[in-house]
Image (cartoon, rainbow, N blue to C red; front, top):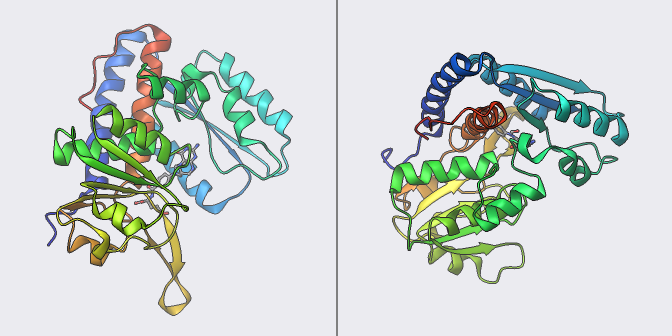
Length: 296
Ligand SMILES: Nc1nc2c(c(=O)[nH]1)N[C@@H](CN(C=O)c1ccc(C(=O)N[C@@H](CCC(=O)O)C(=O)O)cc1)CN2
């Protein structure tokens, strides 16, 4: 059964093509390209891959990419000074500091230093507050990408029971807010939740963002449920190699789910596509050009 698999890679490619059209229209009106600054501190191998992919996607969409790679021993003060410089730069519409940061740097302090109107990651407390209160702002890329995939597959979500497993600031909490705004009945489950399988079994929509490889199994699911797997876990594979798996046991879950995202190729590619979308929106706001929604 493959018709229940949600192809996030293909959806993201379509979204990126629509964004590229939106960028061309913006350039014609504003006389400049949208600019995205990405800051990487240290040499985390996964972060290096993601930052490279962001640079490539930004250029391919017709935007300006400003990459800042800082050494792992960069001080918090130096990073905050760079953020202040990017906040003041009119060529920079969006700022993203790649996470995780080295342990000696306070992530919350860095996120709070980003101008909320350039915070294309949607992590700033002002944007979290805007999302929680229904005010327009920037929404974190991964949960917004999950919502796009769900709406594309299910249409109207109102009245559905949704469970979000995981309560992080960057996925679980904003995902719950987005589903609530779509009039779902939302449960946020976490490490202290009692009888998680029973909670999951009551859900029409399951969003797994818990960071534990293949934890959610098919026999936990309500038949026909839509399953969005945000997990990206590298586990040992045969021949001393490793392979990528999600938080959902894909084989058993795909046999029960009405729709399911794979890992890789599900939610991951949406994160970068939505980042471009948020940057395009930021550019319109900063240049005071009305945003004609690239059908998103
Ligand atoms: N400042 C931020 N830091 C981090 C974010 C973020 O949104 N903002 N999210 C993650 C990492 N991330 C983007 O930064 C990201 C993760 C995964 C993918 C992706 O396309 N994954 C592929 C598999 C790639 C692989 O082989 O490793 C997939 O799932 O198909 C893109 C972006 C943490 N940090």
